[in-house]
Image (cartoon, rainbow, N blue to C red):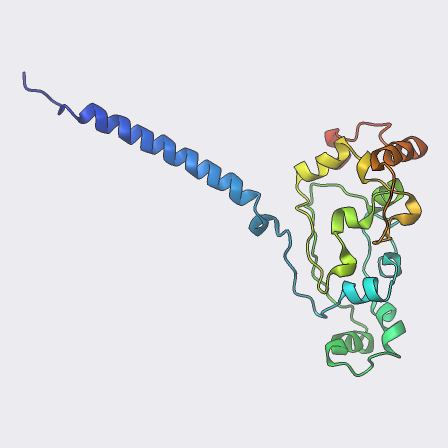
Length: 218
């Protein structure tokens, strides 16, 4: 009986399987790398806004407290965005004719709020409460970075599930006194973990299970 397959058929078959599984493995690795890249998470990217608002100028140079504009951050799930009259409380006196502030003046005149574009947006299935974190002593900079040095606001962290869990599993080194939450220049010369553990006991942080699914998915 004639030979159906050549002597090298087995070798080519093995090479084909190797190429197939190797290609699938490479595709999987590429997908994992891409899903965690800044391109996908938007980390470090700035978002176009109707007005080029500079946190570096307002929060940095002028030392305006975060709560002046984000006035519900201590009590609400959302930090809140300033209404136009908050902006105009200063800019009715300063830079009154600046071209870049034309949308702000128009917003006030027409009674239409400015449509700011979100820099950080969590999925609808994630529950997050700013007030809970602020009152626990999580500084603004822990999540939003050194906002006072950003000419244009950018996303400082990935806000991925694993990133959030890293903090929930070990919050102590990331905590600070409540009166220093919005202080971008706050530093502590002692042991941050020791301070954080003391704050956890004082404010009963972690009495429940911070890593339970229900904490963030309700």
